Length: 372
Image (tube, rainbow, N blue to C red; front, side, top):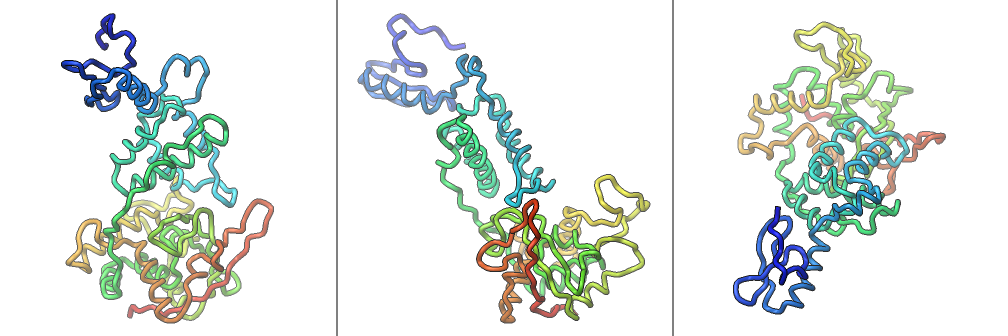
């Protein structure tokens, strides 16, 4: 507890103190650092009051009496009510991502929403790695925009911060490198790589493809996860793209290789090692391949193949980077990957909403597999 002020200092605002001699100094309420405020008392008092308004959270009895909502309460309500742009509920992976971002703000949980200052927000975002900071900032902007619309706050401190610059470390796949990884992969992963190369689809959409999605010679892909990743010009903002891919001879050959003696509803599937064929509560079918497992097995094959001896750590390309190589090859062959990747025109194709018909965008595979 701070020592009581002397009688001659009782008119001073909080955090302002006399310095040695005739000077004044201000103690930062969050960092504890001291800052000189000059020799003029009136100017020091004015500056200290302004600093207190900016830096000192208003977690006082007024907030309690007014029943002001806390950041924790409001952010959880935001998450429970958030919907995709097509009106559907968030996917489990999206909820997990948002929850991780909110956990980084755990120190704000019991603070009144209006007490979150620009300084506090900057301090949090600057303490995070660039990619994580960008992700968290985006979520905070959405939360405070909603709070403004409900009249709970008047400003959006996250929107006033400067977006961090992310230096991309991960390199792209080469055809030679990916071929080596494919050769070192189990058959189910080879099939997944081939499908990703031909269709340009993301990991989550590849593993969700079912045999029942093939109708009248077309493979129907209702893209589950889309983002606003600035590094991928083919990503949609948020929602779903509906792509109907014509099954040509090249794609049919891959689909035929996916057929085996396992009766699975999923095109990409596997028999779990050392486990019985009991249906998992977390899976739709025991043979279903989960997204994290795809990434782990792909990295194992990458390490085993030594496909990129000059790269290490975060530089090593992931399964997702197959998408970039596929789009590049489609462009190189003179074929547009725009529809195949999720766009029908320059406008987004997410036209689905409750009570409306899904608009499928027809697309053709534009390349042949480079793997022998």
